[in-house]
Image 1 (cartoon, rainbow, N blue to C red):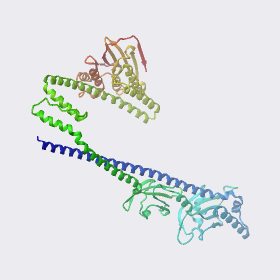
Image 2 (cartoon, helix red, strand yellow; image 1 turned 180 degrees about the vertical axis):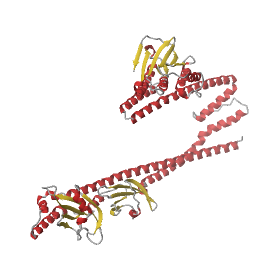
Image 3 (cartoon, helix red, strand yellow; image 1 turned 180 degrees about the horizontal axis):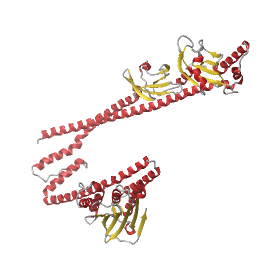
Image 4 (tube, helix red, strand yellow; image 1 turned 90 degrees about the horizontal axis):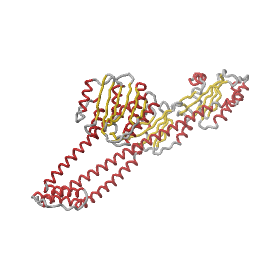
Length: 606
């Protein structure tokens, strides 16, 4: 390979490297900027929707309060005994009738109409006459036939004020005016069974308009108030688009909605007032809401591209210096190809390329010494076998842990669904104790810690099965400090509960004991269950003798995993031994030890 060819490969490699980094950076910046824009836009839109909903709901509450004030205004005659007496009074002459009319209408003008600009007309209607005060040249439409009006008949029957929804009437001219009314039955203060008449108040929308005029949105928007016939009552539009109301299709439910008008996306909120049947609609332009986010996106992309161009320039300037040792290694490899093994690559830097140069030097030295190469190969084979053994051990450990968590979480779920919160809390506390026990310990823990894990597990299962489950931990005191792999005993107890409690309703008793058998620690788990069928027991025993767990019985994977872990950790003299009959099953866990022992027994019963 000549120098010209090497320079060509050199340039191609640099070009590919620069191109790869450039494309990666550009793609990364575009993706980050785009998703950041989406997130920011959605957050801003959701915040605006929530704020707008609160604003229009508060506006609706203010309108309801305003209408409630009108309801309370209809109680004014009750606070004036003279007026109530005049309403009940039956005149005997035209002079008395005229005096009664003047007194009542003067009260209506001074007390009910003059203090409030939005009240247009007030009436007190009796069976014999009408008393009114109006600010308009026109009376109400059903002035002459009020006795046949639905609101009059409904007010006479109702114990509460009657709201007359928004309707159009002539008030100041030929053009109809939007008016809403409230009516209340008047009873005699001396005798509630006597109905004196009905008081009716007509009002325009100046009061509602003053409430809506105070509404200010953080972003430009539009506010509409419509009646149940979808006629416009109030409009406030700060958006550049005009005529939005005519093109807007309202949803049937309250809350937020989105729509498109003339190709432009809008976000809206709507709420309906139950009493007045008015709808309040707020509208925002999506483009206006996200304008700041789009501006931030453009600035971010622009600055990012400037940084990318600068980084590419700097990278090109330094790439030759950084890759120079690599080219030196290539030239040295050409020399080695000729059969000269005495050459060495100088170690110019302590990085990946320096590591490559060092490895190349080691390789050439290894080629010179066959005996050293063979010994190194044997060492590598031994290390591979050891790592395989460790990885197999870790894989077996990871298979055991989820086995218990699944059942525990299922029990907690059932307790919560059944409303047994105390038992659910107790389950969570025991689960916390269990997890704390296995997470704070390494893969090899003391027998005392393992017993704590088993106790937490049995407490969880006792909550699940109640009186059907009882257990006894009879543990030799001298065995508490023995080190064993974590979760060596718990899967045995779990297997017992699974095949005894879950398959039968008979009470189950579990006994856990530990004792010394020479230099071996013997731990036994005994139960009074129906025992393991002979055929199944034979398959389990065969699985325990195999080197791998792939062909193990699915129902006995916990037992087989524990057995494999003990074998991997302590050798062939350790493991499980299972004896089963019609009176129960005994699982013996054997761990070889060489420690001193002291006398004493610790017993725990539940």
